[in-house]
Length: 247
Image (tube, rainbow, N blue to C red; front, side, top):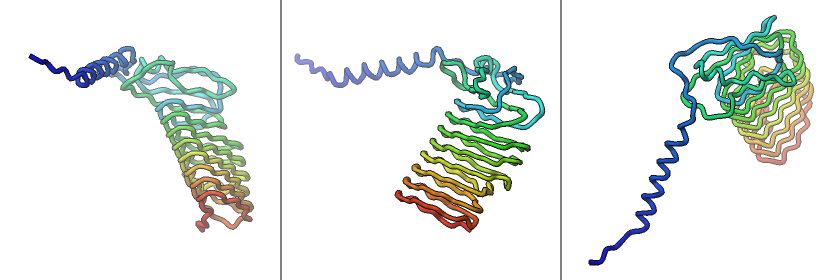
């Protein structure tokens, strides 16, 4: 009796078993959030900037004294790094695998100068006053929302990921705005009324600004630039993006 062996099916079965085994073992060492949610106040060195690496949502408010409050699973909070370097808090969990957890961060600081996202978490900045300079950088998919920010004169924005920036309230003190877009994220800045605006875009995200004196635009990507106001315009367009009057 001849027995025909289908080696293709045997190999497929072996690889399927190995695949299931690897999937099961990949999560063995993962830390999962405990059911109970707790609130803890962390002690950190003074900082005026944050770099967000994970999926946590962060809300920043102004106050005389710095305070950091974390809401989430206690076993996850204990793995949150609290190191501050060059006045910037690097917000990330200790190296490892984490599953099914909740974590939110509420920050109170006298001043904020730097906001950076390298993950999928979002940053909301509540009302601030007596501020001068602000730098933002979005390298991930998270978004930054800015509320009232009185006194702001210089604003630098770098968008390298897919997350967007949005100004929710009118700001009239801005003198210089610089936007560099190398990603897919959008810059919603019509409410940022600035004297001078310099834009360099090689990405696909759209940029919306308001300028009163000078608008200097360099486009080599596919993203469009929309502007309001009647500034002097300097433009160098080499891509498929357009400079559009939105007045």
